[in-house]
Length: 290
Image 1 (cartoon, rainbow, N blue to C red):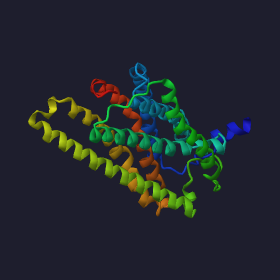
Image 2 (image 1 turned 120 degrees about the horizontal axis):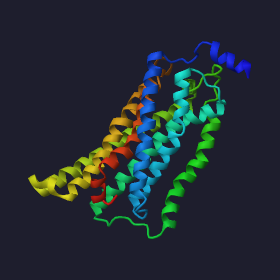
Image 3 (image 1 turned 180 degrees about the horizontal axis):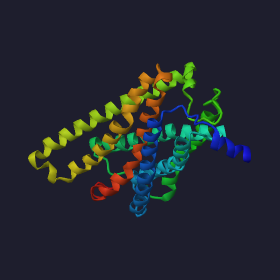
Image 4 (image 1 turned 90 degrees about the vertical axis):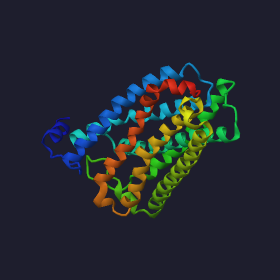
C-alpha cells in the first residue's frame, strides 16, 4: 500500500500525451459525461410513454449504448488527469475498446433508423409497430447477443502488445498486425461510403418534398419529418465521418499521429449529445411519431 502511494506521489507522469492534449481530452470527456447523462435522463422520460414504436425501441437501444459508454468515461478522465493507470490491463483494454464499440453501435443504429424511414417514404409503408413487448425485446436482444459474443473475442485478441507499466490507451502498435490494419481500413471506408449513400438518398427525398409542396414546404409535417432525419445525418457527418477519414491517414502514420488520433476519437463521443438535441426538439419528434 505504501509502495503504491509513493509511486503515485513521486513517480513522474508517464502518459505519452502532451499536457495540452491531456487538458483538451479532459475537457471533451467532462462535457460529454455531463451533457450525455442529462440527455439520457430527459429522453428516458419522453420515450417510456410509448414502447411500441419501432423508432422508440431503436432510440432505447441507443440510450443503452450511450449509458454503457458513459460508465467508462470517468476512468478516462482520471487517467488523463493523473497520467497513471493503476487498474488492471484487462480493464484498460475494456475501457479502450468501449469507445470504438460505442462509435460503431451508434452508427449502426443511426443507419438502421434512417434506412427504415427511407423505405417507409418510398414504399409508403405504415409505421412499424410492435404489437407486443416480447417482439420489441426480441429485436433488441438480437443485436446485444451478437455484441456479447463478439466483445470478449475482441478483448482477448486486442491490445496484447507490451505497454509501459501504468500506461493505458496506447495500443497503436496493434496496427502492425496485417489483419487489424485491413479490418480498420474496411470499417473506415465502409462507414464513409454508407454515410455518403445515406446523405445522397436524404438529399433526394428533401428535394422531392420541397418540389411537391413548393414555397409552402415549411408548413407541412412531411418536411419536418425529414428534418429530423437531417439532424441524425448531421451528427454522423460532423461527429463520426471526420474521424474515419482521418483514421485512413493515421493508419499509415500511427506513431506520429497518436495524439491527434486521441482527440479525433474523443470527438466521436459527441454523439452522446443526440439525446439532448432530440429532447430539445421533442415537439418535432412527437409530430414524426417518435
